[in-house]
Image (cartoon, rainbow, N blue to C red; front, side, top):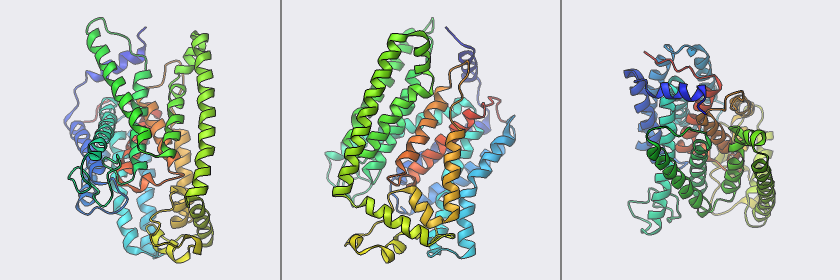
Length: 431
């Protein structure tokens, strides 16, 4: 059965994109590609980060220009304004002189611009172009995993390893295997959302239709097999939860409950078993963390420091010197902690009240941007993007993926796609 939504989507796909939209799409894909290829680590990579930040300016300006020609552009401009609160808040710390590391805070202002630009760009693009940007994220993650496999057979100082200071460990384009795992999980959710979307078999070209779905199923299997090989316990658990949540978010399970009780019962039992497995695995993971790692102690120390530095915080970028100077003796080692391994605790410490406000804003956005349910099934693109954003935010509780330009830009791109879907994306083309 072909629904009205399928007809609308097909009509949109046949629309030829105007020049400004094609330019914005090209620059957006280039921006995300540069961020992933040069920003897979949390340290400043010099020319790579600089070029990405410079490219963010024309992308942001062209996005704002295009939004002026969209029917509901004013609503979307408000969202861009909300996104701009992040660099403006960091700039406020720098201007007011309430940061312990002015140079690092100034650098942070520029580092968040690619994410803001990516968010604004997808808000200004029609659905057809947003889908292209999402598939670019999948392609980059798949390439990174393939590169990770090639790295395992190459020496540490090989050109295949963008971070030769670390031995190859299936990291791909990322310095940290946890962030590689997050990238894979996001791509897997996007592909799964597309596969679960009910697409009628066309009367003509059925062979191509099946070939595409088989190929995407192969990509999903490739990503699924590679995910646990990264060694990231948290990402695997969160990805498993996201995989379970995807058929719920797109209404697949609800439709099965309505039309197929046996299949729905099997799905519910499978979900219950998977949920129990997640709980057992999570408890085992926490036990390993307490026995073999120091993250729990870092969380406690960071929370104490954050309370002591309220309301202003220590300033964005000041975590390393502040933590080294105030860490308890049990955490003093030859190596230093570069991050709190929890985005929320580090934002609280560095941003103070503003950091807490940003956390509340992110959580409110995640609730607001959830896919809408109604007589028509939610768009797979909005579902995949929203679940991907929630996945990254969940992993941020125990790691720092958003400290890398790569994952920060990808997360912002997905957030823009989810927001556009939530607004009931107008498919009117920009001038």
